[in-house]
Amino acid sequence: MHLLSHRHLEHGVGERAFAVGEIPGILWTPPTQPAPLILMGHPGGLGSMYPRLVARAVRAAADGFATAAIELPGGGERPRMAGAEHARADLRRALAAGEPVGAIVDRLVLPLVERAVPEWQTVLDALLALPDVSGPVGFSGGPIAIGIRLALVEPRIAAAGLFAGSFVPAVMLGEARRITIPLHVLLQWDDEGNDRQAALDLFDAFGSREKTLQANMGGHAGVPAFAGDDAARFFARHLTAGS
Amino acid sequence: MHLLSHRHLEHGVGERAFAVGEIPGILWTPPTQPAPLILMGHPGGLGSMYPRLVARAVRAAADGFATAAIELPGGGERPRMAGAEHARADLRRALAAGEPVGAIVDRLVLPLVERAVPEWQTVLDALLALPDVSGPVGFSGGPIAIGIRLALVEPRIAAAGLFAGSFVPAVMLGEARRITIPLHVLLQWDDEGNDRQAALDLFDAFGSREKTLQANMGGHAGVPAFAGDDAARFFARHLTAGS
Image 1 (cartoon, rainbow over the protein chains, first blue to last red):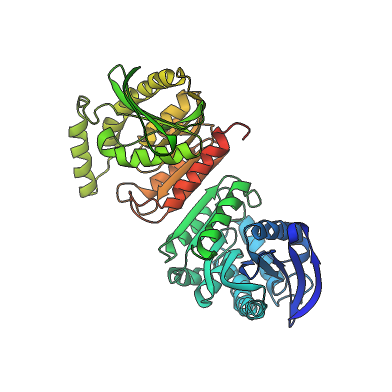
Image 2: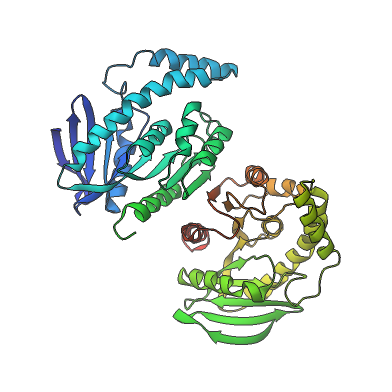
């Protein structure tokens, strides 16, 4: 891990920009250390997502959590993924025309999952080697397909808060059935970019004995503040010592 | 209102058994007064439900809320409602046979709603006349059909936490659409006595701009403790001064 910068934000929150190989990322740490870690998923574009990520990080630090975000393959300044732009254009066209999108979603999302999940695992190795970061580890956010695969293959992930706000390849429903860690799934009821019934079917498929679906009103970006509070308490229940 | 008994429980919680006309009820009050009030709905049988109700009441009192429960028409020691036993037997038979239950639900639930809602309103008049109880008022629990009608016709109800655990007559979907107060709806995903799709359709129908569905694993009686915490925070957000 190469440390690119280190500064302090409000309330004693540390912020480190880093790179692990060609993967850029940001680590936020609370004053109390070592801290359990939440990996924050996002749709890609670490720069444009920064304001929302740092807000989530500062809030999580107040609860005693370290948080980390990395750039997705093809996101931000990273080299585009072959075929991704084409697949995204096909998806927009198919959605607008009301045509089935399954094959396009497979073509867009599966290669991203295949590359992003091992990258998260590599970064996780590096983060957990730091003296101020510890397990257990949570995953929070999206894309939900990455969260599903990571929850399934990475035993250090002890709980996941997933945002049902993007497409999941049909073949991954089988992976969802094999997940057993506690899940907290957020669904925006009127999300223009998300098929509500598909999200409900996915929630039903998850194999976890403890899983909660919280659906709120509004579109993709309209998650109410209290939903963030409830998700924070989910992680506090499952990642805090003695919980 | 006739006061039948008055005693103190743990943590300074007052418990009064009362009757308003032929309607028996229990009022719990916190040490801080006057307190906003939560009406606690339940399936009937104040005596057998007492352990669960008093647990909810003591918890709500810790959050600064007064709570009240009344016996449903036909419940506990009150005179049976004509036709209710018959309708309940028909419902069990139809469910076991996989037959449509709509007409039976109408026959079972509509008369109960017609009688129970004015009774809640009469009791509410009496409770709000007490010096240690104040508005705003919430409704919490079930039967959900009673909560829907009450939320629609009683302007003193400012927020409702509903338990999607019983049948709603189809004609009441139109009433659900006209509700505008904030709602927090609990759904047990594998509730053996509840049709999941009907519950999701009902949630979709509610006209409220702020409505949250929280679905958790397990059967009818398996609501996890954290779901109670989340519901409590919903009421704290909407019924506490300055919220």
